[in-house]
Amino acid sequence: MVEQKTSQEEEIDWATMAPWAETLGLYFDFARADLSELRRHLRKYLSRPCTELLGALEIKAHGMKGAARNVGLERVANVALELEEHFHAVRDGVSKFDPIWVEGRLALLDVLLQRSEKMVKQRYGELNDGCQDSDR
Image (cartoon, rainbow, N blue to C red):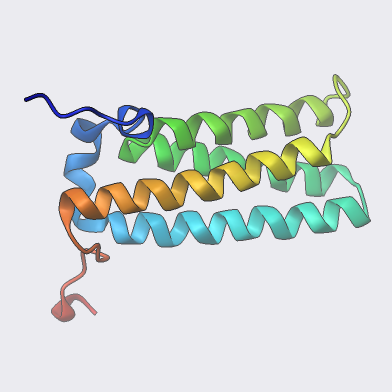
């Protein structure tokens, strides 16, 4: 019997992820911190819109995209790319900032990260940071 994959599982490139299995705990820790920082920058931007904060949002989204793509989380990378492109378009004056859309994308990133981490744990077991006690 062939195991059915969920749509989320199809968005994980397990072959790309495999070399990172030892450090996926770190990836998810940093991804949650990046998401928190995106939300913090967003709150600042909404209270005081400025190009510098928009640039910070764009850079953080860009970093999240690259990290997710490196470990094989394509759906996470694609949502981060959408955010990056939105921030860039606003910075270039091509479109207006849409805070509701941005909040929705951040919420989607949160859900995707949680679901991805759960599936990764099911596949690899409990995640750690890849460091041995002797490395510290």
